[in-house]
Length: 238
DNA sequence: CAAAGTGACAGACTTACATCA
DNA sequence: GTTGATGTAAGTCTGTCACTT
View 1 (cartoon, rainbow, N blue to C red):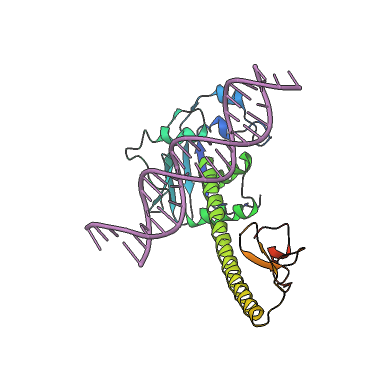
View 2 (spheres, rainbow, N blue to C red):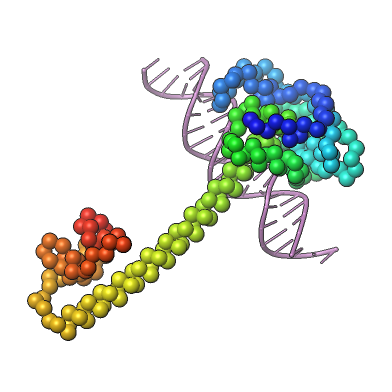
């Protein structure tokens, strides 16, 4: 990954044990390690000393809070029985009186996450762990950020697609209006200059009446190469 | 080899908090 | 100071996949 030194100025000191889940012993992505799951069912407290250039981030109960003064701080991860990494927060919250505090990522953290997202929209466990270490976050937090980021990307794309379809619909509506007018004009012309009565046929799909021959009942309309006409394509519906 | 069980993950949806006008 | 809108971190549920038994 190219996310080499975005936080390289940080001084980080950690004391404690990482979760066995955050130490994948198998290189294979998406390969669970059941033995490690059973081996340790607890996580010891982690002590982290982080030094950031502008502000200090403190991890308390899974949340990261900004301190107004640039002092080095110690983040405490309360211990708790875990089965999976995503159970962390509920266990950590036992220590915090207030249930759920909003984490705000620093600009540097967001920038680095964005940079990584440009390269990979998903992360394998090693990448996730490395990035989390670099950002002084838990890998779960990195994982959540990528999940939400993917969701936002998809939502944005859906909105773009929606706009595109709206424009397409407007164009087709206009074209439909124009063609209806053309039909009316042709009908009027037909009344002015009576011709042998054309065979009237009902389109099986839209049940509108059309003029035409035995082969193509709607071929009386001049072919318009610019637009696709279902009437000129017998196999197509209206 | 097939089927059932299990764990990890991603996506969708939701909730809750922070920020701003 | 209050309020509603918005952004977003995080929780929950569900489906899928890979692997094991």
